[in-house]
Length: 159
Image 1 (tube, one colour):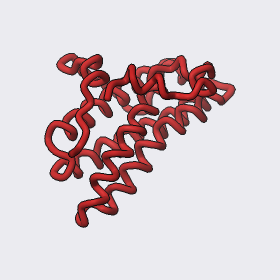
Image 2 (tube, rainbow, N blue to C red):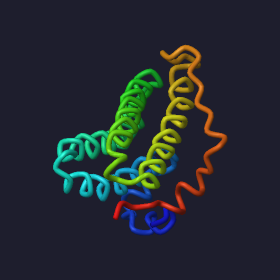
Image 3 (spheres, rainbow, N blue to C red):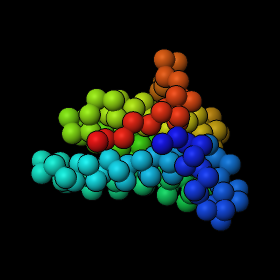
Image 4 (cartoon, rainbow, N blue to C red):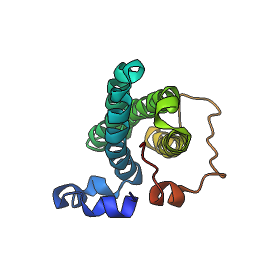
């Protein structure tokens, strides 16, 4: 699966919305579709059945909160929903770490890096909406060692 092939299957009603212009929104929708398969794999293992639901809900919440925030009238209001999305992205990353034994090393590492990229984007957007302020003093996410294009073109899926 690749991000480019996935985009072709996204309905035009979604792609034609101005919200589609936000990279973090597109990535969060893609992450949600990827997590569908991951949640199925986790559900099949008795020890991770409850984790599957938590993971899928957390990943799905990222894009939903970005969409709701995008539709708000003020930067402060938008930032609040983007912060909810940030919390969901971090929660998703946590669930992926916990599911790594079932998902496999390649898939888990991919998802951890992918969630970190979404977090990095949100940490850039939030202060812009707040007028330069973020509630996390000194937070900086560097992902120089991660090739985002590779994350989008080579998505390992659990077997």
